Image (cartoon, rainbow, N blue to C red; front, side, top):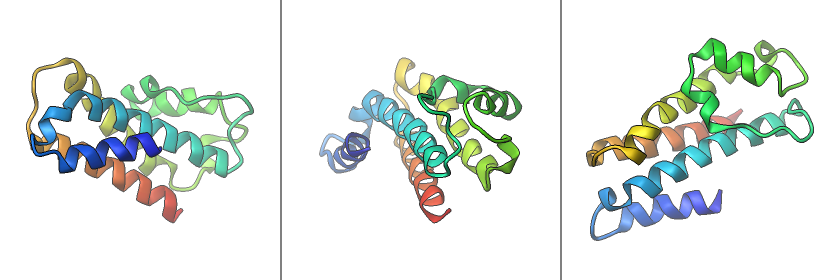
Length: 128
């Protein structure tokens, strides 16, 4: 998580602007979102031993995401409090990920939105 936060901090304070960090920022935020999700499930005590959360899972519809995750946890996914709202945030991040990483340059607004989504996810997990 430190690397993710360092990249966000670096991008926000770069004299060249946040756009010069587009690809690294998208990679970092995607990694951070899946890591936060994994940590959340681990802290809830529901993640199966040895299971890892894959960022690619979040590029699907909510029903499919829940189905995939249900194979990696020890309780029904519906029993995890506030999990739908967390999944929706991660899903929004992942839906932009590949366009930002592999596509043409995006606006500062798009990058700031990804950063905001990441911090929203982090805050919701911390407050849960």
